[in-house]
Image 1 (cartoon, rainbow, N blue to C red):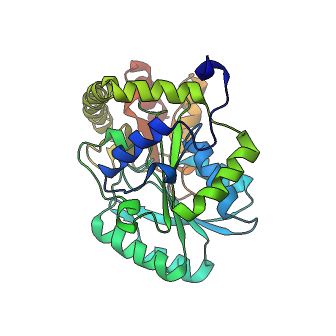
Image 2 (cartoon, rainbow, N blue to C red; image 1 turned 45 degrees about the vertical axis):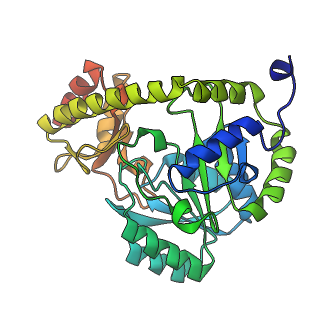
Image 3 (cartoon, rainbow, N blue to C red; image 1 turned 30 degrees about the vertical axis):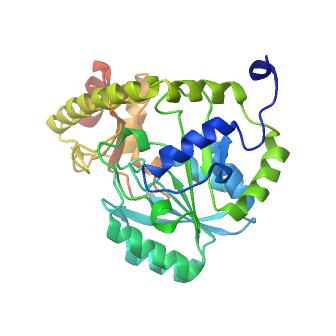
Length: 325
């Protein structure tokens, strides 16, 4: 009855936090259960951290391109947002250093493993240089790791190299389990937890206990592990098939065969992604043009494809027609 009717505690279900601590350690991130807070989602986790870390007018660095909702969320917090160009191995580290010197940002938000939208993976060299720069400038980092369970092989984690000193890591089960099961988490430095707890009580009081209990059950009985293994295999097949279909149309992936679900692709010369997306929308097909992800609007010839949603033949038929017009 308590699971169905009562508020959860501000930090969230203790047994699930203990299990998450063990899962994080598999990626080299050492966090005790009292350094982990459950949230309703990855988005709520970032929102709480922005409330905790930012004042209106503070500067935040993001990758260019990056997940489009980062832009909207940071605008809601009245932050100044500065983009740093993304490479296949992480942010352009020279331009990252330049942005630190010019803008003195308070925060950097990124995906270190399976970057959205590009599929890029942070290299150890870039990670070490980035953390050295962050330490010199007093920069805090939010590492959004919601795609961790889609990896084929482990990538470096900033939170692991940093030891949760100035890096906070967030995760979620929305992508791997269900978008309607709202369960995410924050793993943060120990001395941040009291302030984050106060903020969570002020903004949402307790946690979603029912979702937490469901996730705990699936993680404990092995169902989730088997599900994710099957999901990775299905995504790998879908990625291969989608990339092959796109290449045949002259649409070239920026990274060949990334893990996860996203393909960041360059369109043929003289084809504008926004024009293609408008044409497709008129045919009831929703596409993701590159500049929706780019703060500098320099991705006009790029488009993000979700391989998990590219099984419908209409997508390729509409793409072909749109690029021909």
